[in-house]
Image 1 (cartoon, one colour):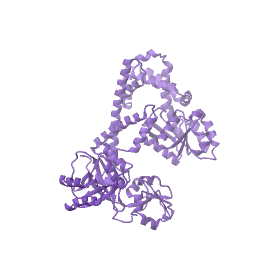
Image 2: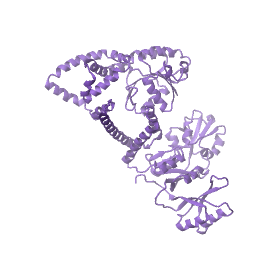
Image 3: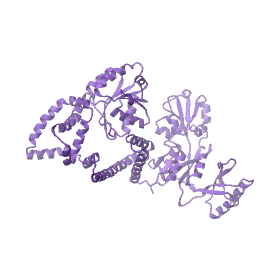
Image 4: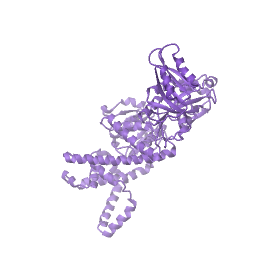
Length: 620
């Protein structure tokens, strides 16, 4: 989906950054050439056009776009504050359009801001856009097109009128603000905000509110008379306080104005920093409390506490909003997110996290067998990321595939075991059942491409050769990647779990060649340290001299003690012709065993002592 922002001013700049940070193809066009990424003729290449233009230019812009009507059919998105005069223009334009009213300014945060939907088109692009707003935490509300302007006259017109009336009535000078209360300071700031924006937009808003403004003034005169009577004043307060009852957090609003002050005196600057620091602390507490509530929802939905993709979008959004060092900003907010997650885990009683491969993978399926919940899972893109997460302490445990009964050892895992400061403390197995899936129901003859991980394809070659010999095979790094690449004429080989999560159509289950014999074995790893080592299997690396019989001498040590080697692999050491060996022996090696082993090897490194693990305690 290609998005064009027509008019890259305040709100245009906001929407451009918003969709860019979420990975969309987005460009800007503006009459000010320096703001434009494309020429006018390029507009026809876009699927969505945001109309972020002054309201008095709407008719002209729609007229210009109609000239391109034969060449493209975009979804127009109208963001005007008043709808009456402009929806007729959009109706007559021949374009599909979505009309929304964002109830916030370009320098505001979209989270908890209201976006009013006035007219919908049912286009698929529209659903994607509204879903992005919702995922960002915006409040999506709807109103009938005939009611919008009347309601805005009440909500916007009167509020803006009151603020500008203060500016009209009070003849203020700078010294007067030295005596201002927090409430007046906030009102002054808000009035200043209005009076330093485009007057034409506010003229449209006030023109729309003329009738209700007169009603408000008449009622205000009556209210003025009421305030003269003590008993009526008391009665008014008691009655209205029942409706106007939400004063929670109002002190925070009033204290927040201090952060907007401009001071030069050194003592006042110190006071300013104290006030800002106090505000930051209180806001951090608010953020953590919100995180705890989210944790409770995640528990109901069985969703993980850590969601890497969402966190990355948040960090990208934040760095786009500031000129401060982006690396420092990411570091600071990364720590804030860590603090929130820490409290979320505490709320749910989770003390340890388990790093696994992406959602829908067989690794996740094995993890769910062990912990029975997604809450403690930390998803990683690769096994190398899992090793790094465990080594750095981002996760207490990691689950990594070590071998498959058909395809053998996962060799990159062996290399990572040798190079990272982790140890194996358990193993678990999972029977692998593959499914052929697609975005919709397809006949086998209509499938042109099959996507999957090389091992998954290798495990299903008999089925593919028999039923899909015409299909092109395309290898992906993971089953998650395969799902992302699906279109209307392709299929993927993934787990049933992945198909359910991604709402895919299962064309056929159990397409693996060796049914009931396709088993993957996983290692459980933790950071190397003073952990108690328990188990009947030891895994280790060792090296031998480059001479005939050197490996035989090592094997002889185990043979004499009656110890079975259930696994032996060689890996290049980095020097041509020189190899390191990895072994699993069915015994917890004693100090005596290690002394003998030292005598026949150039080095050895124990990387784990373990047994099979049926369940993993992340709460203790």
